[in-house]
Length: 183
Image (cartoon, rainbow, N blue to C red; front, side):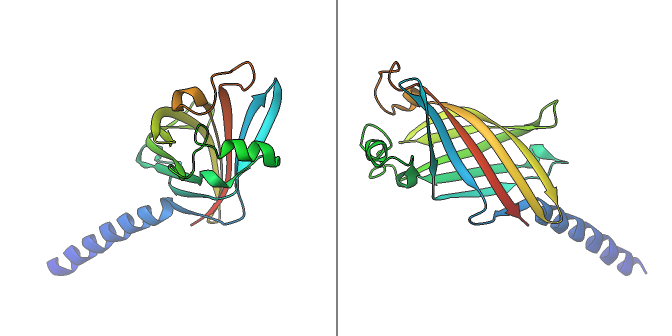
């Protein structure tokens, strides 16, 4: 009888551990999301997107502190819709994808905010330079499908990206991430 109780306890603990791990790992549904950037060029909005990106999201809204978010974009996949601007972005003093093909965000800590959103604090690395950022995001899930929507701001000059002429090109660039995920 004692032996059966030990096995039962082991089975209950093992099941709850494996269920918890599976419940928080989310996989990106390809072609169901986007990563966009919005800046200002001569005072007018300048928009674009990254066509190639990946994400690893391990998140449970009931326990955000145990979560982890890692996102990468291929820098040479930047697309503003203007061939001339895209050519500038690929130059060494901008995105320099020959030497730095990927940009990466990796969270260190996730917390719940008062308004039901979350904050992922971590490091963003672009062109080999890492800076701390905080991404504010929403996460809604139902029936094994989740919508992830996050935003953060990049000060491009902190990363050494582009020219110092902030009267021509704004230093602040907004990043918007919308992803559809599955378990």
